[in-house]
Length: 158
Image (cartoon, rainbow, N blue to C red; front, top):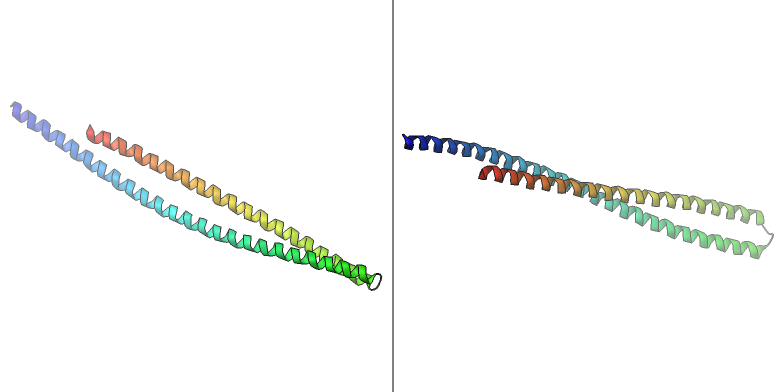
């Protein structure tokens, strides 16, 4: 009778361990699924960041070109000023109008450059905050997985 009771107890423990094993396997599959989804989201975010980096590079290049154009306009304006000084009062009205037009163009170019610089800075800040948020999410998931693994390991040992 004692042997039979031991067999029954052993059978119950075996069933309990099998049930725990099934729960552990389900938990492991669920975690693997979550990890795959997070890896895909991370890859998407990395692709977005790469795209934004390319756009920032493009805008930076454009900004440099605009700065060069501004320098050329300033040189041109200076030359026109020198011509005006040389010519004196001859056609001064035409030169004055041209000079004002160039100054207006230069001012417009300055405003456009400032606008582009602000846009680039906003995009850099957005990319930085997205990267930081993604990094924090991944750390949280890693911590959750480690905690869950420890819980399951403890449950299996029990």
